[in-house]
Length: 249
Ligand SMILES: O=C(O)CCC(=O)C(=O)O
Image 1 (cartoon, rainbow, N blue to C red):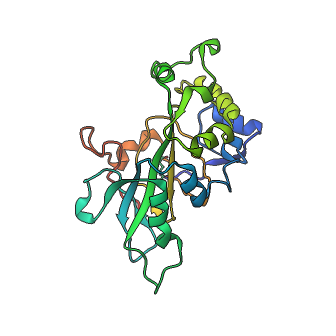
Image 2: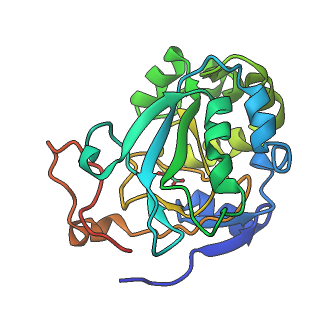
């Protein structure tokens, strides 16, 4: 089933543009989208930049003693018997609680519970989400600049960072190319963070995505939609409906 590596292109080449225009998965090297937050968005910077009153979702999962990996869970109560849960907390508290995972283990023992943050950063303002739900692109004269069509989910300096450091012009240009493939508008931006070793279970996203890696590395396995049923998706009415029963570990 595994066909090979996703193509890897320098962001400003004709080959990169060709992959985007045809809707193929592509790794863009040097992509300007998030370059200005790389090196700046450290845990301590983010602990200052979020205003401290926000409630962010932290996924808790038991550490796997035999390996440095753990699988995050994603719904309150679903795995209560395995000591997994979702807790709402500020970025500052998350960082404090994460320190034992970031520091070298004392006496060789790892913290029993691992943490993974899943936080919305930006969402489309209502007028532009109405545009995206209709599926097509409105005439450009009627469209607000992409940056203005989003609102930040948090107050504090994080909003200023997102406004000024994300390359909105690049994103807007790419969105134009994607419209031509029938894709909808970008409508949200989410942050994931942890101390490493976490994995997200096999799932599908209903919308096209950019995954911008700010720090560390991530391995992503993609399956074509045509293979979905071979991954044993949960039934439509199940709480895990966008996830697969297959366990790739
Ligand atoms: O970074 C992760 O582990 C989650 C990413 C994810 O779920 C996604 O991009 O759809």
